Image (tube, rainbow, N blue to C red; front, side, top):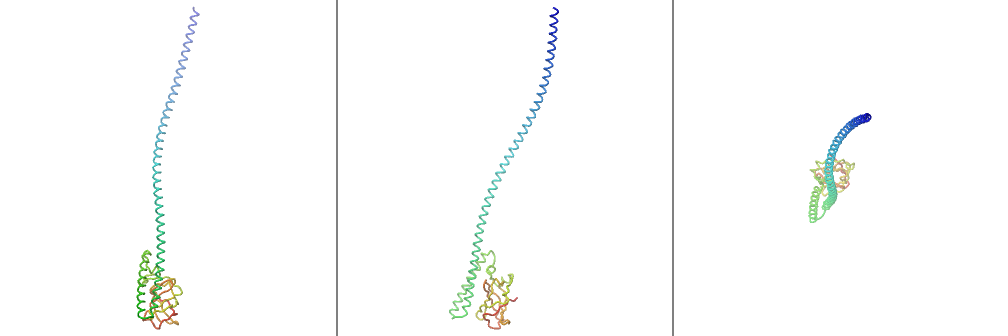
Length: 266
């Protein structure tokens, strides 16, 4: 009986010890689990915070993308407008080039026509020195017609030369405009030019000089022969190949002839 009681006591002690051990182990495991739970909870909170930051960053990126798309659209619109303006400017430049070319062509034609009319006018004046009264009257009418055509061409040339006077574009001008014109550099030929023709009653002379020699309307030339001055003249018309000088009547000392020398004087 005592043996059974002792065995039961031992079993009871062993059960108590086992219960104590298991209770301690459960408690320790609980603490570990609680610690892990806290760590996992903190990690979850950190993940949720990171997720919130990521969402905020994604929202910001989307906003940036939206602005970028808008800016890109504006840039495309400006580029399209710039290309349209470039095309328009190119067309305007081409139109201006065509206009300038047409203007240059018109100016050259006017200059050529004006020079031809002036030559015809000089030739008519020279031809009118002789002939019957009827022929002289016809020559006067022809001269008047040619002079009117010259004036008309000068007016047309002044409109196509952008404000430049006809005298500047063709090498001729009136005495008033020549007085204001700047004297170009004179060539050596102006020191001893030849009188090509003499007008009726020594009224004018035609000199073998042109615009290339630097003379302008208003220049003065002394007519000399054998080193002696026999008349004074003033340039009234200038072309590329010749010049017309009106002789001062009071200065004539001897009849003028072809071959006399004309010398530039100030």
